[in-house]
Image 1 (cartoon, one colour):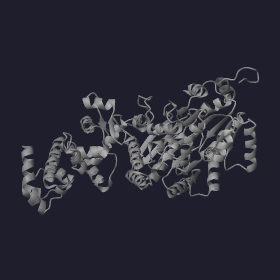
Image 2 (image 1 turned 90 degrees about the vertical axis):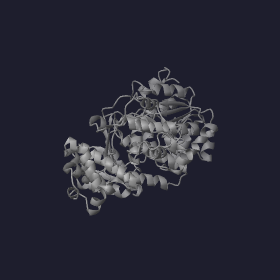
Image 3 (image 1 turned 90 degrees about the horizontal axis):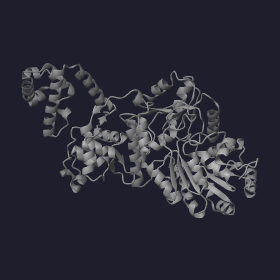
Image 4 (image 1 turned 180 degrees about the vertical axis):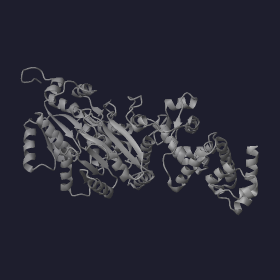
Length: 609
């Protein structure tokens, strides 16, 4: 191919003359070279890394037509308009076109005057369309947002399934699939369905270093949202809500507070959604409050923040949603709220899906991975990148809340070793729930049938509750000591985990971050009281707790049934020496005085002696 001056047109000259860039970024040049040489490509690139150039330049170098498959009309239109402005002959066939526009596109296709044609998978994979393009010179296929073909991805589209026929219908036409959101299981499914595994994978990493990552426990989302926006200059931003009702409520709240805010959800009239979207794309200070119906195909470079009032569905959904911020490379913020109710709702949504058990199991695994991110003991970015299999970032990022304001953690190397030992001794074939049953000594039918009740690790973790062990498991995952085999749901030990088992690594645990209703409020008060105790009294308090635990275990009742922590604090402070003095302790009635008085008075006397 030669240009107007007779010089050969190259990928680099097109990059400069058409797109205005001096140099390729990352692996763009390698991808273009491989694609033009006839190789199938799966390109996994972070948002803003220049995916489109990877297939647009080969399309311009080739003589024939390149067909681009895209999931949304708005996404097609934006790309086609951008190409037209750059002088590239491109078009899109979709339901928004008039009959006259479609006839003109067909005419230019048949005359060979069209370089790039965008359409949805539904349009392309009809018998009529396939027959029509079968008689044309097709240079390439490019499948944008390729994760839509995977039922494990964040935006599964059943229509994408039909694209698995392309490589057999057009065996000599190279195919490129592109996505910014695909974990290892999703990548494997894309490779199998679209390419029958005949493909080169170009993984360019998932890091968006300009986005500050922040997570906060939900404690009144309205006040937290207003606090986040307070003092922030008027900017474009997206606020995601789980329900339509909450979307409308949040938009009204911001409007009442003087913010330029609009709502967007699937229950609105289509013309209203279109108007709101248009305003968001053109106004410099508009905040869009939306459900996940808003987002894919929104290529606005100056979105400065994404705020989640509720927990997203999965790491893929979260990554895709925060990826709409900071596409211009400037600083942006992703702020997420989550709470116990969010987790309950997400579990319920998964269980109520009309899907098979395998799909539901993977849904729970992905939710667990997102919780590992939310509960990460250090550096959120490392946790997020590790989930996607991106090992490029090895150091703490310095641009997340845990790097800027580290959370208090406790030494938990021994607990981590217990958990890993239970995984190892059961052959790395089981998920979190079964491992926790083993550690806490829960004699289930499964433990008994498999003989796991006779393992050395059975019951060694009774000092922690099941929820504590599950949180610890998520943090082991977040730190890279274990990972979940998405195919079978079993926990696997990494090389780093094996070093932890040998004692060559240490592990610190971030205790449960949730406030679980009134009981936790009481324990918080108790902790405050305990912190005010002299050190000697604190030691007696801990000894009394152990004594109470023994009595409770012998009676098979929870420890608080015997005495509350507040009662033990009072005992540690006042050190009763007689039954009458013991009767004055907080929470001691006549029955408990008679039942436990002599035992506790004797225990305190022996301890203090």
